Image (cartoon, rainbow, N blue to C red; front, side, top):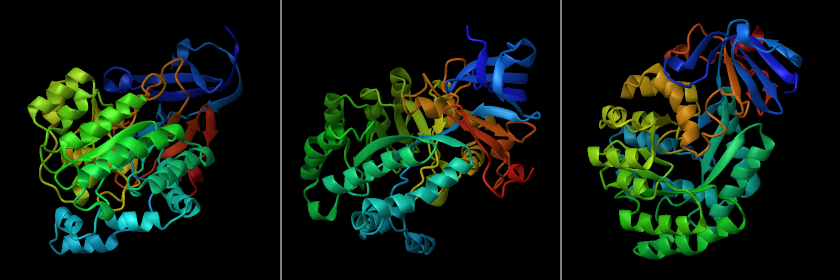
Length: 414
């Protein structure tokens, strides 16, 4: 075995996220070679490999890089006015049926070129990176026509090239019915399945396919048609499921062995059991639950009982979760859904990676996996979910390369 590595991280406590109790190593060390973890374990057992850099973690906690596995990061405009309307009593459905909601963002996004979308999205992505995100999923869904959807996906790819972050692009053409297809919902679904999806595949722009299964969006049968097209194209699927009502969305996602079923506020026991059997991850999105002031909580106890992996994400979007803080999302998950801090961190690491089909290379600190790491100035990992508005990130490694913390954080001033 080679006896030289690029980096040795020493004097750290490590949350490997393998097994229970955070997979914690109290006095640990980690070595990086060629962008991957060469060794991780107790410092007393560490090989004394020569290293180009020996990084003293000074007792901080090392975790996997965070994974935000459900965002709508690329869009134009904002919907602050709708926020005011909802505070005055309008429901999310009221706003949507009146021509607001998703369609207002569609109008702004269609009018924006790739450079404008890139500029608008870059600031949101920078906020995620500043709190430790190393992998982010980005959905389309605000174009609702072939050219505009492809434009969004191209921007998602370009963000990954310009920033030190891994992006996964998801085609969400079946997000809402565009106004020009009013009364012709099946025709629009045919456009998504027969034209939009193949065009995205031809350009190599999509890593997965998503749909919104809901009364204000698309029926289970219509989502199934999109999923059948995705399956023929060799793309995995995921689903906005059971957010506002129970249409059997979780079971539908499971039938196609979906990577994840997302939201799940109204999912029943049968849907949870189907997800467990299929290996489909439960993606909980507390930002939308909070912002829309929902009352129906997702079935966390049933998910635990059936051993369904629970992932978390910001769901960053302009209408129901204008949230760019994974740490605040963890706090919301604990406070609103009663997840434990360990479950919350697993939701943004091991299970977030699983929700993207990347659990073989990301999400835990194990030898052979990609060296995406975060170092936090905390006394215990629970602080990541505990302190609202705090950002104790001291260092972030992406593909084995270290990045200093953002300016203005306590760690940057140290």
